[in-house]
Structure formats: structure tokens, C-alpha cells
Length: 364
Ligand code: NAD
Image 1: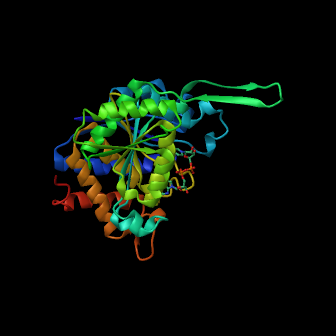
Image 2 (image 1 turned 30 degrees about the vertical axis):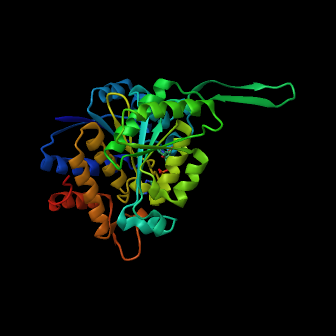
Image 3 (image 1 turned 180 degrees about the horizontal axis):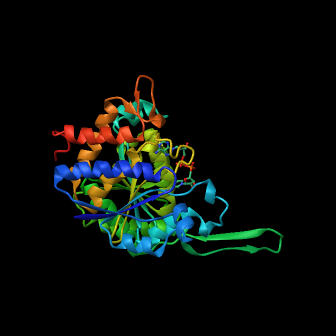
């Protein structure tokens, strides 16, 4: 029995998670997986009901689960609140609370959507990249961090970029493990020609690589990587990088696919993994039944793969999504001439149908 905590959050969160449950129930029925669902509050709804974006009870429920599925948080109703009281503060708090130091973001260009990218089809066709980003260290967390007044009337601002051997080792291990399940190649991205922390990063990654002789390792400077991602993205399998470089490169890689509503993510590291679509709560379309549930459904596939170790079930879900798109069904955000427009619920149902109808899919 897999115990999963659902955190729908705000906006379209509820709509897309509901479709995800239907799909996971379907694949569970085929694969002999039983689910136990528990729902808890995070974000704006948690502020309204409990006075905090991450209530203690929510974190406790997540810590006790086999995996956590999150919709999205935020919306105009809470935009006026100070930073640490906003819905988005709940996201940072849960990542910290669950010790999620590794963020995994796949950027895969699906055949039926290869013309959705702003890049040429010949460049993006077949792209399948996994960005593994360090999530709890580096420039975004380093201390000291301050501003001070200078005698010349201006100010000085300081952020600190630091990494320890242990921090690099553990994220590198996640990347090499993931590469083992894919095409056995890790590109470690740093700025070792300039930064001391990057030199430690590189040395440590090389040490970890010795444990994975079956995985090819290459190093790349971040500026070159940014260029290579749009020049020849097919050269990449797993990109391993720091918090800030990963923040930027994962968005760049995501855009190769051309569609925000399709991008899942996983945050790993602690005992329990957290899975969520990359997009936000889309308040402009909430409640209209038009949201694309596929990023959330694909996040469910990542949960199957990384938290439950069920790669075959994950592949079944991913293949079903691709099949539905190949049949020409699109939610509004992906709509193309000649395609068949469907809403959130129908898209979920089509994926369920494809799972049941696709006996030949998902075989290892
Ligand atoms: P957004 O991702 O919510 O929306 C951007 C655009 O994409 C909108 O036009 C929206 O309608 C569309 N869109 C997003 N997801 C879609 C889907 N599944 N199907 C169809 N269309 C989709 O980003 P935003 O508008 O900048 O932010 C809205 C709120 O979400 C803000 O409060 C922001 O802070 C929050 N946010 C939350 C997360 C998160 O929970 N992880 C991430 C980003 C933004």
C-alpha cells in the first residue's frame, strides 16, 4: 500500500491532481499497486484555513508518507502579504522540512509536440534531458548575506557562494544513479575556471564518478552549457549542476519542449520525495475546466519511478500521455490547427483509457 499525501494548494491545483489520482489508480490496477490517499493544505488555502502557508500537521503528514504530490500554490488574493507569509513560503518550508536537496526536471520533447518549440524541429527532435539541480545550498543559501551603507553614499550588497564536499557528493550521487537508468552520461556544469567553489565541485564529482564506472562523465562551463542547450541539446543526458546554475539552465532546457503545461518535476534527498508540475496555480483559468493536467500526471509518473521504484508503471503512464497526444488531443494551452480540443477531465480520462487500452505499452 503506497501512502501518498496530496497537496492540491491553490488555483488549478485541485483540478490537475484529481486527474493524476485517476491515472495512478488506473496504472495501480494493472500493476497491482494499492494507494492510500490523504489530503492536506498548503499555500493560500492553508493561510485562509490555518493561518500559515505550511501548517505543522501538513508537514507531519508528508513526513509519514511514501510520496507527496503537490498541485501549485499562490494567487492574487495573497499577493499583498509579506514574503514569509505568502503561499510560496510554504513551498520553501516543505522543501526544507523534507530535506529535499535534489531537484530533478526532465525536459523531453515528445514526438507529437516537437513543433511546439520556438527552436527548429531538427534541433529539438528527440531531446530527452534530465536536469539535476542542487536545491538547498550554494548562492541562494550561503551566509553571510547582507547590505551595508558606504561612506560614498552608495551601498554594498553581499551574497555568499559556498559548497561543502558532502553537499556535492550527495547531489552527484543522485545524478549518477539517475544516469544509470537512462543513457549513462552525466554532464557536470560549473564555472571552475573562475570560482573556487566550482573547483571543489568538479573534484568532488570526479571522485563520486569512480563509484559509477558505467556512467560517462564530462565537465562543461556554465556559459558553454547555456549555448550548447540551444545549439545541440541532443548531446545531453543528465545535467548535474549547482543551485543557481540549475535554476537558469532548467528553465532554458524546459523551453526546448515549448510547453509549460507538460513539465513535471521531482524533489528528492530526504526520506520522502515531493512531485509537482513546474507551472504555477494559473489563477486566470482556475475553475474553468481547461487546465492541462499532463504535467501533474507526468509528476505522478516520476513518483512511481523515484519513490516507489516502479519504473514499468511510470513508463506506462508516460507512454499513455504520448499516445493521447499522438491521437491529436490537446488542451487549450497546446492547441494546434487540426487538433481536437479537450478539457481537463477529458484529458485525464483519455490517459486512463490509453493505459487500459495499451497492453503493449510500458513493457521494459
Ligand atoms: P503560472 O504558471 O501559474 O501561469 C502562467 C501562464 O501559463 C498562465 O497564462 C496560465 O494560465 C498558464 N498555465 C499554467 N499552467 C497551466 C496548465 N496546467 N494548463 C494550462 N495553462 C497553464 O504562472 P504565473 O501566472 O506567473 O503565477 C500564478 C501564481 O502561481 C502566482 O501566485 C505564482 O506565485 C504561483 N506559482 C506557483 C508555483 C508553484 O506552486 N510551484 C510556480 C510558479 C508560480
